[in-house]
Image 1: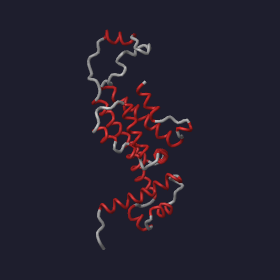
Image 2 (image 1 turned 180 degrees about the horizontal axis):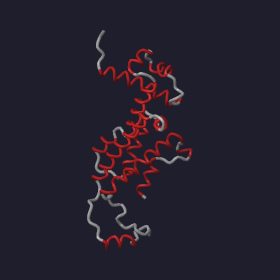
Image 3 (image 1 turned 135 degrees about the vertical axis):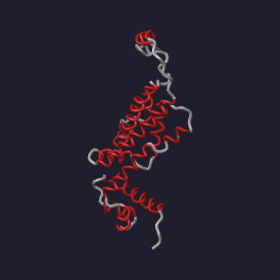
Image 4 (image 1 turned 45 degrees about the vertical axis):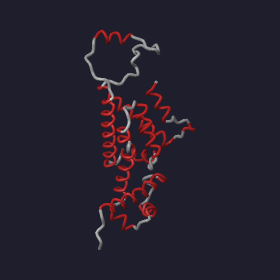
Length: 221
């Protein structure tokens, strides 16, 4: 019997998972049977069970594929661009989501699965942690350097008014963030990305959903 290469095995696994994701997206994870996945894959039942022990393992692999795909290509794209602000980063991430093969609806299903499935929860948590690490490091690189605060400056900032007339908003409101602000800013950015995915899953712009441009404008206001 000829030896099957690792590349061939991986290709078959991806073929099966693509079929499963299509079925999960259309019918729901728990409403999709193994028979439906087998039929959609175009492979025999024996071939399916050669690569996966059953539906639970397919769900876990499909979940990893979906969640990792949320930020696929973003890190590489940002490396090839000059430093970007949060509005531009948000639009870059959401553009990738809009063009991805995996639908927002399936990603939301995966997050729902994570609430009761420890393996899927671990995958979701790891993907979030990696995205947070990258974004906080990226925002830190473009941050203004830290400096020792001058008490008189703090007092002045507290009562100063910028162009908007709001207390505490000076002329440097659009300046780069301080390094210690990078982590909370990255968390806020990810929260908006996740909210965008949920909204895309249940609302269209014509139904009142905000577009990625609407959300990006929040960073620029």
